[in-house]
Amino acid sequence: MKENLKYDFKTSGDFEIKVTTFFGLEEILAKELFQLGGKNIKQFTRGASVTGDLGFLYKLNLCLHTGLKVLVPIADFSIQNQQDLYDAVKQIEWEKFIGAENTLMIESVLNTEIFNHSLFVAQKAKDAIADRFVEKTGKRPSVDLIKPDFKLYIHVFNNEVNISLDSSGEPLYKRGYRSDINKAPIKEVLAAGLVKLSGWESHLLLIDGMCGSGTIAIEAALWANNVPPGCFRNEFTFMYWKNFNEDLYKTIFDGALNKIKEHNVSIIANDNDEATLKKAAVNVKNANVDDVIKCTNQSFFDIMPSKNSGTVILNPPYGERLAINEITAMYKEIGNKLKKDFNNFNAWIITSSPDGFKSIGLRPSRKIKIYNGALECRFLKYELYQGSKKASKQNKEV
Ligand SMILES: C[S@@+](CC[C@H](N)C(=O)[O-])C[C@H]1O[C@@H](n2cnc3c(N)ncnc32)[C@H](O)[C@@H]1O
Image (cartoon, rainbow, N blue to C red):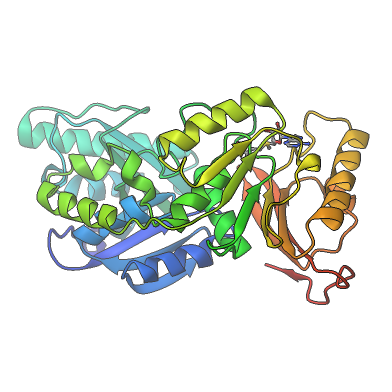
């Protein structure tokens, strides 16, 4: 077992980085990694791996729109029993990464017969780290399950163990601009992914017709102006690592801010609920995109688009709180409205409600499977061109 332990954490040169995302956004994430200068990019379910240096790790945390967590794999080894895990974890020179004064959290995922509970793996690994610290320094780091300085992931698959450090801390969807949210807000990373999947081009009008907290509209504005989504946060866990290079971080941060573009973008965030819209307007201001997003308070069914082409994205209620006939009536009305007043637009609707989307009465030209939290959803594209309202033949599901 011991000879299989291979860990390294460099302060210079390239190393492997893994970035997680939501199911359905892997390809967009991989493109982002490429555009940010990543090498050896490989997609996997709910993520992608890439190689880069410490500055690149900082850049990913600051600049990725569709990344959830940026992880650095530091060890992989095989075990035969529970004691092997303790021994291997204890061999790692944790004192090189963090101090005994830092707080710690360990999460684990299992698919093995060696352990039958993930909490037990986390406990065993924590004991190994604490025992090492006591031996080396006389002090032990404490556990903080809410806001730890240092977060580890342990994945045990049969006899193989992988350990990664989480450089982000709070997941990257927690951008920090949403001071107020409404019911059923969509996560920022998912909203960013929907905007990219929609293929919206920033010189065209975008309408977030049922905007709730305004997340889709805000994420579109961040993409359009090249605003690094991480710039609203003060903290990432890599800042607690012993190898944190503050000057390098500042250079990366300033470089990302310097790339912000300001151009003519036209985005509408609309909701029929006045209190909801007020909250969206606060979030838009917090994100500093109030110059490109216009907040309007009316029913989507009363909107008359100011341009004769563009993109509509709708995240309507899915129906958890509504009766089935109310849902089918609402989605039918959405379909009718799109047909009547959005000729030449592309419309995209995310919903988990099959009854809802069947009632729209238009044939989608794309259906993308995606998850909104635990809810399996479809992100449906409708191309609203006169004379082409009947079926598009490529009903593509990914
Ligand atoms: C699922 S939530 C949208 C969540 C949003 N994407 C966010 O990030 O917070 C659905 C929203 O649709 C709004 N809504 C329902 N019917 C509407 C209508 N006819 N016109 C405009 N908005 C409507 C609700 O007020 C609610 O805010």
